[in-house]
Each structure stands twice: as C-alpha cells, then as structure tokens.
Amino acid sequence: MMAVSASVLPSGPDWSYEVKWDGYRAQAVKNGSTISLASRNLSNITKQYPSVVHAIAGLSANAVVLDGEIVAVDADGRPSFQALHHASLEGLSIVYYAFDLLHLNGRDLTRLPLDERRAALRTVIGDSGVLLSDPLPGTPGQIATAVRRLGLEGVIAKRRRSAYATGRRSDAWVKVRFARRQEFVVGGFKPVRDTFDSLVVGYYDGAKLMSVGKVRSGFTPHARHELFARLAPLQAPRCPFANLPSAGGGHWGQGITAEEMTLLRWVKPRVVVEVSFTEWTRDGSLRHAAFVARRDDKSAKDVVREAASD
Image 1: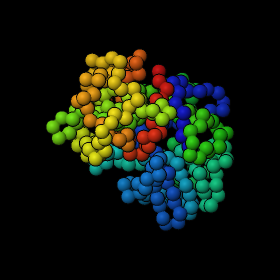
Image 2: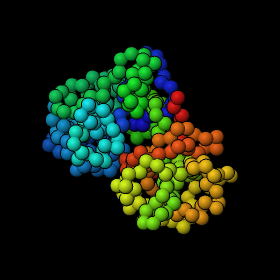
Image 3: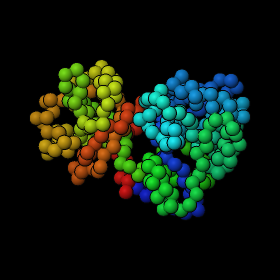
C-alpha cells in the first residue's frame, strides 16, 4: 500500500499520524525459522540486512508478514538515508520500524481496520528487537512542528478505520514531506573523463518522461563511481525526455538547450535517484538540485511529480 502526497496534513478524529521514516520500505516475512525481506519493488534484500533478520526472528508469532521501513540510525537515534549505504561506519545501527501487520499465523488481516492491525502488531513485536512506529500524539500542527524540529523527513497521516490496499496507492494514507525531496529517473548525463559531471533527471507524466533539469552537486566520489557503473551499460542513442530541448536555458538546472544536448549522453530510464532542491521553477525545473542517494527500491515507472511541501 502506498500513500498519496500532499502539502498539509489532513485533520479530524478519523486520522492518526506517524513519522515518515527516511529509509528503505520493506516487507518482512517470518515463516517458522525462515526469514525473508523484500523491497518495495519485490527484490530480495534479506542478505543485505542481517540485523533486521535477527530482529524478525525474535517475533513471538510463528508466521507473520510485516510492513515497515529499514532505517539507519546514529548513536543518538537520528535516522539517515545516506547512512544505509555506509552501514559499516562506527556508531550506526540498522533497525526495522514496523508500522503494519498484514498476516498473522495464517490469517489475512488486510481487511481489518488499521487500529485493529496496530493492536495486533504491538502484541506480536514484544521484545523482539523490531521497533514499533507508534502513532504520534497531538494535533496535526503540533506534530508537524515537533517533527520539523527533530529534522525528520515528514509525517504519514492514516485513516484509523482503513483497510490495507495491497499493491496500490490510496488516499487513506497521506504523506507530507517537510524538506523538498523526491525521487527522479535518470535519463542522461554530461560526461567528463571516465565519469560524469552531472545527471539529467525527470519524472513520468503518463507515458512521457519529463525532464526537470540537471543535478550536479551532492555526489561523493564513491556515489559518483557507483552511479556511473550503473549508467554506462544503459547508454542509448536517443533522448528519452519528451520536453527536451527546453525553450529556455542558461542557468544551472533551469532548462537544457539544443546546443547543450549535443554534449550529453542518454541512457535508458532505469535508474532512480533521490534529489533535494529548494523549489520548482515556473517552467517545471528544479532549482539548486542536489543528489541524496540512489533508490534501488523504487521502480522508474512509478516516479511522478509529487505535491509541493510548504
């Protein structure tokens, strides 16, 4: 089940609120002594997160399916998505925040109201080492203020009586990001020596891939090397973006002219990256875009323009 994006939190007694954890969405399955983890695009990521597997193994139930988020936290408990790619660094821990219970000992719970699934989840977790993503107390305004102050990514609002809408996006879950960040698809790059200088990224509007400009900053040498290794085999002869060349250009990240396009290399739109930025320009480009991380858990075709955050 996936959330829709919004700029403000919905309010009223039908809604509850959770932290939007900055990590990898993952389904955790325990079947006797067998544990498996699957990313949002159903890739098997079990071997990548042994500490999460150990925590799931400690659940009191014999057979269970959880929905949650794999999160890297520092010594102060602060989450960091970038840290997921450097889990060996001192002081970092990889944890699993569970926020839903889908199956329990052979029983399908997805049609039960969220409040009932949460109650069952709390019982199942016990002292297993799995962390519970508890509903937050307070009004939407109080919650937004507190989460912003802590520097967390955002909040998910959920209807308390809603069923679990398997495999689709539902307005029973509403996500609000406080920092302007979202996923984009890489469709090209500007080469320099044996790597790239910048990426050309965009999102899908129906079947059309729409460019939002270039991303040049935010890359560590390690991230740049890994990304180029992914992109080099995907090179293609034609531009995949429906809106290039731009009508205007000149400023970084605010349009790509026909002349600039001759300097770029195009790739098949397969790789997804998360990007931070200050604002959308009037022509639909990103201002001051910076690379955050590669998102192997997101499918390129699912990447659309999200609602702006206040």
